[in-house]
Length: 103
Image 1 (cartoon, rainbow, N blue to C red):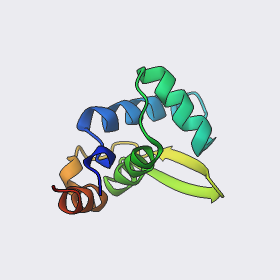
Image 2 (cartoon, rainbow, N blue to C red):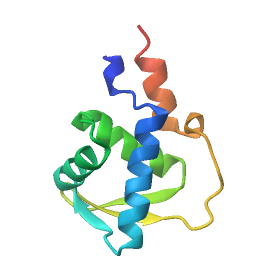
Image 3 (cartoon, one colour):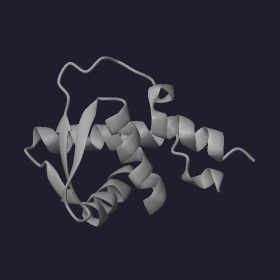
């Protein structure tokens, strides 16, 4: 297992901010490939696909947004209003990655 699949706090924050913005514009459903492409362009950084999918799981774990797969590889995002501030260490997915990807 490669440490390159563990998202950084900055990557998670950038994806979250992008989704908050898009959600506010009424854009809530995206294919995974389109969303990844938009995010890569917006943050000027290419997040690999596996890491990107883990970011979505982490955000869902943190309960700052709900991420629902509405059809194969198409997701609906809903920002949780007044979500309690939390840390990525509260995510089961993040902790699993850190534990299993240690070299």
